[in-house]
Length: 429
Ligand SMILES: Cc1cc2nc3c(=O)[nH]c(=O)nc-3n(C[C@H](O)[C@H](O)[C@H](O)COP(=O)(O)OP(=O)(O)OC[C@H]3O[C@@H](n4cnc5c(N)ncnc54)[C@H](O)[C@@H]3O)c2cc1C
Image (cartoon, rainbow, N blue to C red; front, side, top):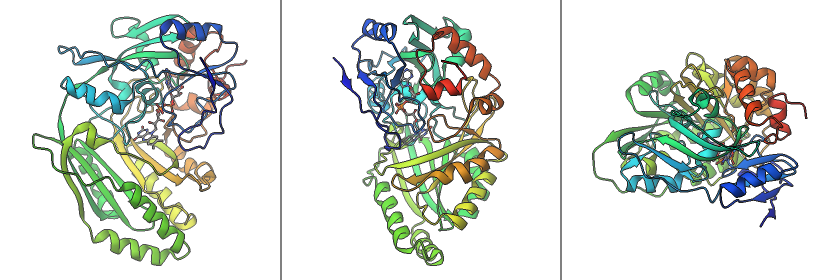
């Protein structure tokens, strides 16, 4: 049973794909789909990425039936999880067994395979991105073969397969290193941006998770920390971040042409509310939130010694030239790992994200913001807006050629490539 997909990504920035959409029930059906394909086959998760990773005119494969949460091995604290499982569904099932993901990003509606395949991260100086917690992968390769890559089998390929953009095959199960279920205390506070910027390094060093959001045209940022505690859950007010973003939009709509008045009103509103949240809850319930206001986003992962300066350069550019911007910028930090295509490969990185309302123009991200990030040595988030080419990726990733060789070995006929990926990996078709 199949349908025409009209698949689109979350923000609607990609035109509907013409490909057929298939949702195979088991491994045999998935392998047959790949073997019988006469054009590109692209796996999709929850569609929360911006680059053209998925669209093609032949076949999109969804993994809804590959969503089982395995039993956690209590000796290793690892579990095999269906690649199509949504993180939000996996977390409560892991909690029932007494375990949790070590860290999560801002949202948790991604699938496990989708999140890890683009290098999805949270924040924390001592915490790695989700793909670094992978201890095993099972996939159907571009030739329809089943393959396990893990600490025990084909282990020399594990770093190559951690972040793979769905270019090696379709992942069906992923073994993840977990931690014991735990509670976090979440604190959010408003602070003058310059003050927070000056303390950022020590806040990263002193807190398990620290990030901050700069409110454009305000001079103020919000700091956010999470630390492990043993305490009772506290009541939480309903998440109001969508409403607050729309209030920032309203202020932009009314006063965008009067930046001084906009700044005056914003600084009065923000400085009046210093500690805005102080709550305790399960880690997975606090780390991720809902994001219902659609936006387009560029995020770059920068060396620690250039990250915040690059953020400042972007902030100055936007406050001088882009009065239409109202979404907060976000600054996070992630520990290094060894994945060949991991943006955190080899060194800790500070991630800076700039968001635009989905109905607003975002071309300036490419023309004015991306060059600042590139000049500062940034690597783009694979799942967010970027214009990285094959040559650019070769220069940024020491193992890019190794990844290309692995890709060729597992998918010699380029079955898993759409035109975007064929260009990225410089494959003639
Ligand atoms: C509102 C919002 C908030 C976000 N917050 C964060 C954040 O805090 N941190 C962060 O790092 N990122 C964040 N992202 C980016 C997001 O985590 C990534 O783009 C992620 O890849 C999306 O997962 P997905 O399940 O939607 O995958 P998709 O976008 O559907 O696919 C992503 C990639 O995974 C591949 N893939 C999917 N399934 C499989 C499979 N079974 N086998 C092989 N390959 C597969 C696809 O082919 C594609 O290349 C956010 C995005 C949005 C829209």
